Structure formats: structure tokens, C-alpha cells
Length: 131
Image (cartoon, rainbow, N blue to C red; front, top):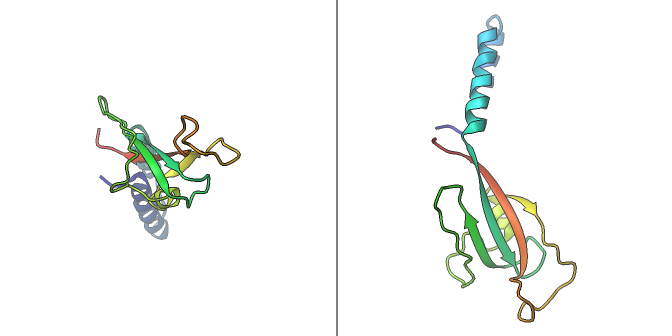
């Protein structure tokens, strides 16, 4: 299934060709509305919590939790270094994730003294799924 953007780009390409050959019709706009409405209801929000050493998006990740929008999915906070999904928040952004929450801490702290794991960033990715 093509992404919403790919489907819309395809519609635009077809509309440009039709403009060169006499114009688009009302049915073409109905087709665009259908593309948009179909992809809108088939989109789910994925959440990724990344815990970093500092509040800088290029800082090393020290913990993560991936929340999938699937009934019954289990989420674990992973804190032991292994094959991280991303080494930094910046890496996740480059892969299409969007930061929706930046850390609240205004000064550095030693996380051994309090019960907080680094600086928490919350990211989202909206993805089309096959309903």
C-alpha cells in the first residue's frame, strides 16, 4: 500500500497531465478526497521514548521504550546497551520520527541520586497500516 504522500503525489501527477489535455473534472477531486480520507483513518501513532545522557539531541541514548499502537503489545524500557534502535535522538529524527516532548530538566543531574533515567525525549511516527 503506498503512503498517503505517494498516493497524493501520484494524483497530482495525473492532474497535471489532465490539465495539459483539457483540465480536471469534479470526479478527479472526489478521487483526491477518497485518497485523503482513506489514509487518514488508516494512520496510527507510534511512540518512542528515548532517554539520553544530556538534553542535547545528539547525546548518547541510555534507555528506550517503543510503544506500538497494537492491542495487547507489551512495552519494556530497555536500559542495557545492546542493539539500540537509535544511538541518539538525532538518529531517530533522521529516520522520520518527530520529537513531541523535550526534557523538562533545566540543569544536569546525576541519575544515581534520583529515580530518573537520563533526559526523556518523546517521539512520534505516524504510519499508514493495513486495517
